Length: 270
Length: 88
Ligand SMILES: Nc1ncnc2c1ncn2[C@@H]1O[C@H](COP(=O)(O)OP(=O)(O)OP(=O)(O)O)[C@@H](O)[C@H]1O
Ligand SMILES: [Mg+2]
Image (cartoon, rainbow over all chains, first blue to last red):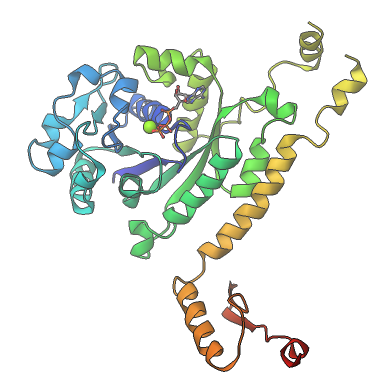
């Protein structure tokens, strides 16, 4: 049985595409055949983050409209042969997506893939709605910042009332918190909401914390999901997240200030 | 900077404020999310009926929906105009 994961947030620019690329790559590298779909019709970006922008011929909408087959539109990743990317259309708008069309594609993909990762657009309009509608699991990407937390809560309400699972009275979507762009130093200074604060407000199961990291920009510059940068903190955080999602028990990292007490004193006096 | 200052930093920080504001907001938004969608219309129609008989203001009626494990309750509150005000 395939598992459909939606990476969602409500608020824009919090790290959904970065996360989608990383976890899809992580799952595929663990040997699970994985497809990652860009639902951001009109503003596609996943292809760039995955480094396959020059190999896009057909897109999601072409497949929905029957202008191309799924096999023609899927792009095999250059680093991992278990990973395939389905790009969004750049020229059409979100109305080109239909619930039946999306459902049909997911059903076809489910025959062949173990995991299907849906990179949601920001907002709560049609694109975001369709990205989450068929999901089994939701990765709620949140920044430690008031508007992002509020939007995540709004999205939780939508997941529990407007999804297929909700409408058909099935077991609800499993929701996970991914707290990204986290700065332990700023939390320590009282300038940023802590992991505990956010978890207390949203009461969600924490899958992992991704620190604010320069490696994310480096990764997107070169078109390689940051999880492939195994030496980087963000890369390791995503590796942990994939392992936890697959059932491994790993202690949380990147929550506490790396610099010890004396390091901090030293730093401050500089 | 002294050692003492180091421990004093996080007092009444902006993160504490953020958390408090979010807790109130999220609790409020969650409770209104669980309300049946007919509530605003019900409130409007009730107000119209009541106003046929009593001269009350727009905000004289509040309809509250509450839900717990055992039951759902609809609480209706109509604030009647001040008698003394009416007589004067
Ligand atoms: N952990 C991180 N550390 C530093 N920068 C990050 C991190 N995660 C994401 N970013 C940066 O934040 C920006 C937005 O990231 P991304 O495109 O993944 O967000 P998004 O939620 O998909 O945005 P949109 O809502 O527009 O689709 C990018 O510039 C990205 O490099
Ligand atoms: Mg995105």
